[in-house]
Length: 163
Image (cartoon, rainbow, N blue to C red; front, side, top):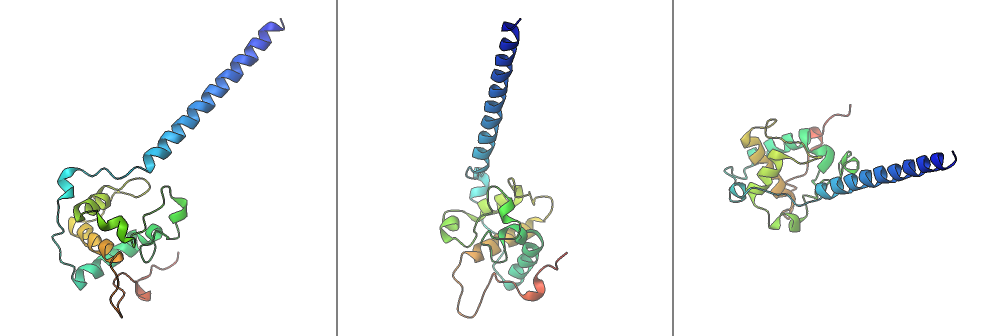
């Protein structure tokens, strides 16, 4: 009788270890998938922004940004918004010129449109023009500011009210 409970205990331990290994493998796979580079379809890579970088387009983009993006990407696009640290992967620092140097407008448009966990898709939330306006704003975050101007900086009246 003592051999049977021992076999049962060994079997349970083996099953527990196998389950633990499986859970770890799934988590590791999930984390590896989340931190992969964006896979942008070729047809988006060559797209050019049809909108000019006019003050009206940038102002419209700022309003959208402060409504939809500032929580994670931060007021100035540094990826330091109040909800940023609760996301994995962390939001991109849009002020980093190296990050955007080799990315086309079409690729940024695709990323905004499609989203990728934890960033939501904006394809059905925003119009095509609104997404292109955001591309202009994203580009402005990584541009050196001219003296006396802060193109991506918010005005205090534009900040969302605390809830």
